[in-house]
Length: 173
Image: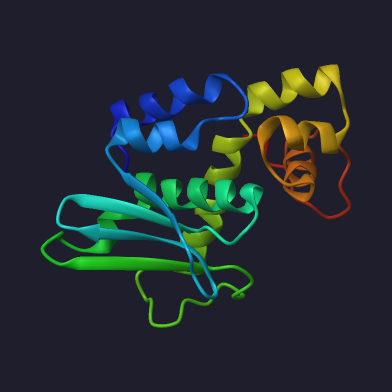
């Protein structure tokens, strides 16, 4: 679980859009890399006290950003599940895997849902989204400003109650 100082580091970077995910990793001492992957979107690896987030460099910039934020959320919330640090542990996220983690029993579906929720909050901070939405309600323009996909922004707007949604539960965080 994240320490208060780590939360403060993340919060400090959430004051301007787009949120600089790489700067957050730098400030936290987490190594970040974009590499070619076959079917994975990204992963987080622990080797002793060192963590590395790897993101699929073949995916779109918006997908890489969200994947990086997702792995950041795992680092902040779930790194204690990755073992004692005496050997390497890796958690792999696969886009469209249906929540399954082949060979990965560390994180459960609930951890993945939580990481996605936190990732959305990091790359699309509530206060900034509300401020920018007041200037333009266009989801495409907002998505470009925050460096996310239009569907991701539409979901965030619905979640924040700024856009009506058919069956999306409202959680205004």
